Length: 374
Image (cartoon, rainbow, N blue to C red; front, side, top):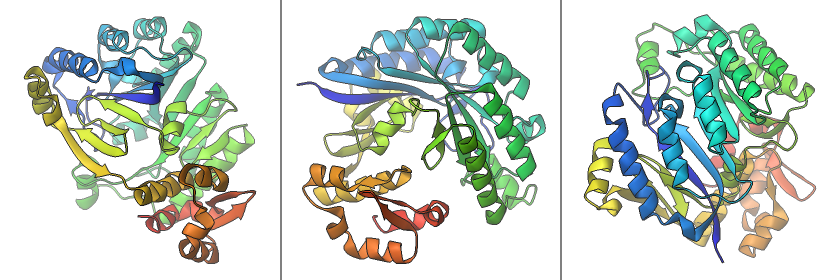
């Protein structure tokens, strides 16, 4: 029987690096796009994907929409998903047009994830985004006209100079467009980014933790009132529109990552490709595919159990006690009695209808819960 998996494809190119971004992505390397795609196609062939049932494909970056759509077509022609698979591509409004959207639709992409981050143009410029809200709106409306009926919009909270009023205005503006899915991420200041340096040099000031939590709960209230189900710490969806690809990852299902720096989870192993695009291309062209791979973890049963708990707590419904028992033949309430007793006493988790889940306080302090299972 074929194994069900998801596929992640990494496109590492950008027009310009956002000030907060620490992903493996490159600006000003358009000259090696063709060489990279050729290497990626060779990796796809080497991975022998025909032996799997492919449930989801997620093309992320970087900025996949910076590519000529012919390259996206070439990639998808080499991957055969199941019927009704979810196929997502991330797009930046500054690198997308109607022709690309039409091609995406034609080649089977059925879900768009549009990076907006804010509807405030001044704020967008201050974090290094290459587009305006008006450009986002053009792309969004074109996508609807072409027939895309599953669209996610990314927003961010906790940005420098972002007030509660600015954020709530962004959320309400996006809600009026009725996307099926909204992801809202807190800014995480990462060493090595332009924003990290700006903060250290005193050029910008980060949002206080207190304001950030007000923002989070304000957003949660607005989206809940407008029919969005809060199903994961940072994700909200209309009924029937949860991200299947991400949900599978949070449920500890297997996936293969293709491309530079892409991560995989297969046969109890977590591994990734090299972060050097030059080495990635060189090794593949020399048919030394495994030279690109670093194994990070070979999981024991105990590793899998702890990870299942952490991933489960990311979901608002929490860890299903019966599902855990079915998968591991052990009751998590007994297995993690000490950890759970402590977390319940601290009011960070609660038990409700056979589910162990984060409390409201736990949503604010989720990292403290995760630490108990590391």
